[in-house]
Length: 458
Image 1: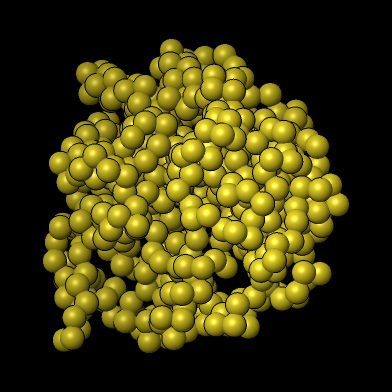
Image 2: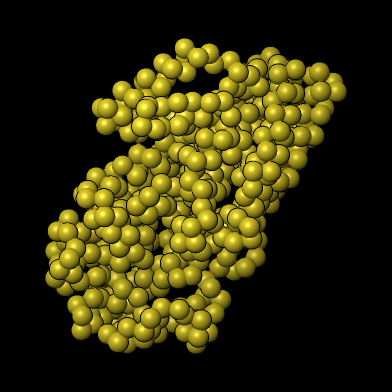
């Protein structure tokens, strides 16, 4: 069966046909690193981690790029408020991002470019757009994209320019030719630090957000590639603007398939920092082990809304324990090699080949666990563990997982707390965060206070 993916551009399930046979090139919009990652970020990272894992399991070579936005209005404001450098803030937040992603079993992308390392490529792209009449310099010194000069604008969102104009909520900027025009290069402002400015043919300034991804994806994957992904909130305007910039400059399709993961919702509303209803990954990991959080995300389809609640996470933890209980009761004799012709594995494959259908794939795991419990077949136990591994699950020692938090004695916990304190004293915050995440995964919750660090079992 051919892998089919829902394409936001065509609004249908399209077969994956890589531009280069056997090699899938994928770009996913990453985080703007001014604060800790929340569960919405975890949802996107896990979703595309499953995508790249399944592509590899299907025999493809994968070049996976997930960028980091490390220059932005929010980053500048946060650094100034903290009294630290922009680089100091972004380095600290990137280390925290890696610690959170590692705890959730998210494999590192092939490339993780920082926007600030690609400013020359951004300027080159802007010059190409200006030469084609798609960019202009406004009276305030900014360089803007002329949206109405690009015939294909609106094809990703499926709306006409007039519909987009009617729905736009941005303030009218008198220096723009059209309110939908967006900034490619921002002229330097007197109150911004020097490290937020670069020299350019347009004077000192910095890139706009949208041009960053166009430049990085083109530099690392070529002018056309196979998959472009990100959260549903990026479909418009960010991804629409990426298409306008990239295709306006090159005349080639930017990506063959556009993928968008659904929101995490709390009380029916999208989880976001702007609404103040978000939970950071590490806050959630203080109460639930990391594999439970990953399982909670994986068992929902990536395009569907994911409703966050303690009840749903409690249910995910109980369900995951049922799978581990089957593995503990009937240990696999050896690591299983997956035979995709086997009836169990064939059903699992069919589920993931249909737009990465993880709910159906997880259902196969539970049916297989029931068969393991019924037959006590060690071979099937090995297959269960191997298929779980495709989703980044069930790779811990089953007995140890089921004892998690109980098997750690007080001396071991105190030793880990001391190790974390030493890491913080050495300003190795990434290591300190990893220790906290590892203890959280074992059911140990740390609480920092004036008198030091205390702990309790979750």
